[in-house]
Amino acid sequence: MAFTLRRATVNDADQIANVYSASFRLLTFLPMLHTTNEYRWFIANVILKECDVTVAEDETGIVAFLALRGEEVRLLYTRPDRIGMGAGTQLIDAAKASRIGALELWCFQANERARRFYEARGFHAIRFTDGAENEERTPDVRYRWQRYGGAVIIRDATHADSEAIHELVAAAFGRPDEAVLIDRLCSDGACAISLVTVEGDEILGHVLFSRMTAPFLALGLGPISVKPSRQRAGIGSLLIRTGLDRAREAGWQGVFVFGDPKFYTRFGFEASLARSFTSRYSGPHLMALALGNGLPTREGVIEYPSGFDSFA
View 1 (cartoon, one colour):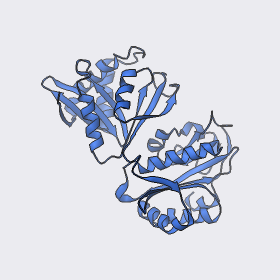
View 2 (cartoon, rainbow, N blue to C red):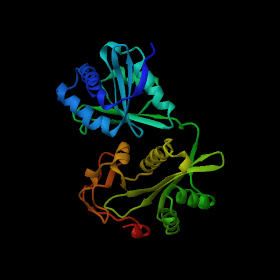
View 3 (spheres, rainbow, N blue to C red):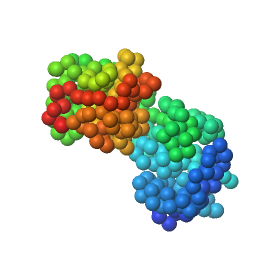
View 4 (cartoon, rainbow, N blue to C red):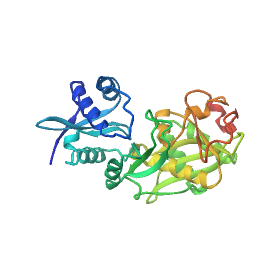
């Protein structure tokens, strides 16, 4: 069955909220924490203001919707009487058909129907949690779909890549500062992991993890750079995940990053984990990620390599 897709407007808030509420209430393993009116407020004042929302409709009105913010699928719900008729698939396919190169979302582990839906459409589980960070305190799973997962190669950067990396980083940031920083970190021996994404002979992206001074074996993530014409295609996320896997395999215990929480929390970074550490970068944009079963300690002094001094 084909549905008509269009971008949502503020006038759709009530219909979208009704779909959300009715579908959410099918998840009987969850506590019901909100009323229908609270769902309506959330859709009107949060989702429609922060996300790109697409609705699927037929002659009865809106039957499904997808709320997308960057690569994050915030919400995807179908009206109970239209589940299994293809509205959700149309919405996912439309999101994939855009310029975006990756999609990520959270799903409750107990929602087996939704998990089968996402896995059948190319999503792969990348993280499982006990639910301590979601409102329902219910175990969940992070899914990811990657457009370029098999189209590019990720490898260790070599000395022969130095000039190309410098040019890439300068172009990505629109200034030479970060490129000079990477040159300095590498010359100082502070680089622990340096990876490039390559398509053919062209370097499309680069990520650096540098050694930090900390109470445990810790790395600093960044800079992360992607060729401007290939940004928002999932390349940066792929580099970060590969680098974190390398760090975990090498025995590093934690990673710190200073950046946008809306971007880095998708990889598991948390500002709360970094809050009690003393650093010149302390604040809401300093985040930490444990690479094992928690950080060895939650406090102490952490320092980035001296090459970062000009960025403090």
